[in-house]
Amino acid sequence: MRTPRLRTGTLAARLARTVGVLVVISLIVFLALRLTPGDPAALLLGPQAVGQPGYKIELANLHRQMGLNYPLPVQYLIWLKGILSGNLGNSNQNGEPVIRLLAGAAPPTLFLIGLSLAIAIPLSIVIGTTAAYRPSGIADRFVRALADLSLATPTFWLGLLLVILFAVRLHLLPATGYVSPLVSPMQFARSMALPVVTVVVYLVGVLTRYVYAEMCEVGAQDYVRTARAMGIAEPTVLFRYALRNALIPLIAIVGVQFAALISGAIVVEQVFGLGGVGQLMLQGVVLKDYPLVQGGVLLITILVTVVTTLADLLYRWVDPRLT
Image 1 (cartoon, rainbow, N blue to C red):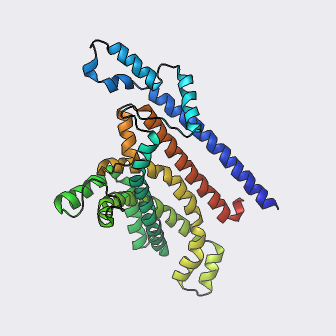
Image 2: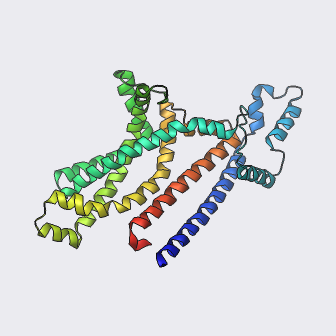
Image 3: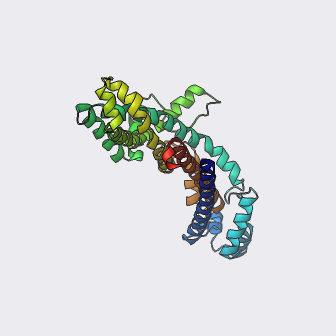
């Protein structure tokens, strides 16, 4: 009866921490946007309107429409009230609901992250395990060198190189743009090929190092040495006995890397013009679209927090020593 109580307590603690993180992040984003130079209402009117008759009146009207005429604490409470009612506000630029804009930009981002993880995780397991098969061997040194190279390569630079090679020189793949799989599965695959490869190279470099380190550590355990002493083939020892325990920490690592994957996806989206959430939010930052940026950061924070919390709970469930 003790384990369910512990797990219930763990869930409650994680939920409380999640709510606290969301409140802190929302406050930081809210203040950061308003402390940056520039007036979103003046930006919307444009520099040509400055000095024109009625400019100050139009500016004051826009401030009232955007709610910028209230003190900062009141603006924050109004925004929180909207969030609790499921309303993230409307974009300052076109008046569209923020939720609708984010929903329209979400598919490219979700496909980019999902496909990259689906390819990088099994690939990292195979490469890391192969390198740990003979520590200090040729394969070991080669894999570690490739992992270091992938970590040292900026994603935007790699993306540009792939565009130059496969789009400009070879004309095999499109350089920019996104095509929905509902429109054309083939064009969808072509449009996502280069962005996914760019993200996978980074992920494989990170995850392979963890798989390799865990495989080397598990390979030194007594039960693995016993299996080798019994004459069991080395591939069987690695993939049947050692790999099962070595993959447990990979759950937590993937959860931690999810936040870095989101930030990397923003850069990749900009390079390849996918029109995802990251590219939409960058436009919002440039145009000082407060509701759009606040809503986007809040949703990304919720997604990252949920994924990391689920990864941590799954890790604790798989490893009984942590329950």
